[in-house]
Length: 636
Image (cartoon, rainbow, N blue to C red; front, side):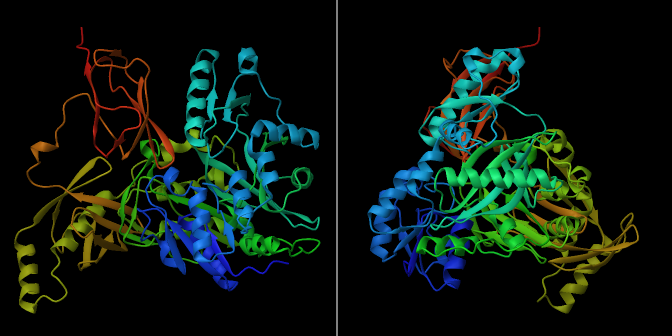
């Protein structure tokens, strides 16, 4: 048995904070590492000690295994936990940790290596009797093979993944998938397999010790995905026949034994509409969605990872599961704008209710451009699925999240959607329902009225004369305010006692109570520090309002056809042969911009001629930077 005393987490954000929480409970000292943008991040503040990794980009910091090992040794740590992402599935890093005399909190490097390439992993699984989809040779593909799914052999998270529905686009998709895979994983190998329409993404959590025991800790459904990345997960996967569950458990244990696995891992399957399971991959690390399994089984998987690494034996069988758990990933992104990631100051993050919140942020923290835009994981556990879903939706609906556009409304709408509540789950959920789930929230006009009334309310320390005088002014002459939200403007003429369909019951700087169509509602109002945005939260929804100045700034205009960077990021690719004077067509991809682990295409806004190109591959650009200009063809 090894007796650990100090743990370095080779990661950042919510997973580092979550691992530190368990380490403290077990009496372990904790060590964080951080890039320069993360110098004051929550995971740094949560650790007993922290070591700087100079730089900002992951390649210079969290992917520098040599610097991380040096940090662990300098800080006196005797173990390294990789979390997920970054170096968590890097066999060479695991070996280097062990060769340095440190304990690696993860599976043997040989197991990581065996599962690192999806193509090699499938060969191993086929030999172990695990069900697989037959691969397709792209060079010999026929219309009968369509649709195809192209996947990166060396990584996951949706990077390097493309759906191909016609053979004419296959070559271009292969090139794009390979380029993205090479950029993300340093390996451009991609492979093709049949794309299963309306399939379910179901996985099995496994845990194994060094003494021959392997646990299959139930199933999880992770079918609700955007860009092949998970959004909502739950355990157990609903609606599976017992025979299918048993088959998945058996296959997952066989997969773990095939590579002499040790520690926590996940075996992922695609389940067809008629109930046939096929192996997708094995993640040789802790999963983002592990809390739902912890809730259902009453376990701490990080604590078990540490005990297994110390050499402890697992009991012969795991505890019995109870109830149902659902997790939603709260992202700083705009689902209505192609899931565009958001950056800036997170002024408020307050999620009420009896839910578990794993996060790497608190109010006042900055969400930067270099890392994944996930703000938090919110988990509800209840005796039944219906109760867990309802509790999670209620907590998210009541959350106050100020400063950044998030997917919160999408999550609430998803959890309350009839298909989801009925358990009709598949990976095409957002393809079918995204438009309705991203419609502008109603009652923005009422929110604007509440914001205007709060703005006009006197400060709490104002004199009685000032208060009375303020109300007299409002009574004698209604005031006007204008706000914009979600592309619409609202002009409010407000009066403290008389509004169509609305009666003002009270108005203070941060709380306005209105009777709306005979129903009393409370509106919580908060302004950011420089008064450029107003946040209004109520049972009718949450709104971010931007006060509109009386006289627009003429500098806000840009040349027609200008392509501006929709977020800070790196230009990773420019369309081949693109130079000023090139003819382009509307919707043609011109540039590819990478930000927060996602790749975004910059499209020609109209057919015409490229008159300017300011972007080059590898260039770092700021939000709003001018990338190119397209002069539209005149109508004939």
